[in-house]
Image (cartoon, rainbow, N blue to C red; front, top):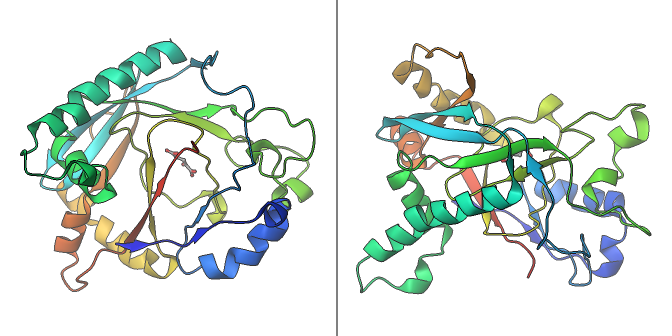
Length: 274
Ligand SMILES: O=C(O)CCC(=O)C(=O)O
């Protein structure tokens, strides 16, 4: 997989969101995704994340069915929970999933390689049908503090053409959404509403991996994804489910796209600031 561009703006460059993003846009466009590492002085939440008083109103349990690289994720809504309860679930999930897999590894395997994205990815596909994770997704809100001074990268107040021109705010588009994840929680690949860009900030916790099909590979990627319709022709009863998401491993994508030897995907792992 190809890596995406990574930028390290200086404090001065970082001071103006609109200007900075405009300056890198043409470089990022062929990839469709990039990572921007803020200057060390930037603090999005001075009060930290230790005592978060947040409720997760509709956590979704993500059950997976299928085989050989082609699956569907069935998202089932569960009752609301506090962030503390979610955190306990996340620790349990890590213990049953990742740490158990780590313990099963052969002693001669190098420990420090475990955290590599490719290794995590292998673990994900090997274990995705076990221990359904919870995902606190699409929650209205933000962990960014109300800015006391200029704060041009606060996702609630981004200087964008939409915010400049639109009289109203749109949840998930010009108003940020908040996500609480855990090992194996996932969100399906999608094109953003109206093909807009999307911006994400990882506040704390373990790294989160993003995949992106480069804009030039869009049709190819969508053609390959059609294989899902062949293997799951009849959608199961949607009653009580929030959604069903098709997922296909990169290996299966390669297999079905045999005229194209490599997968059209690129990846990017976000890491929380220390
Ligand atoms: O973080 C996620 O899981 C999904 C976020 C999303 O859908 C987006 O940024 O477009």
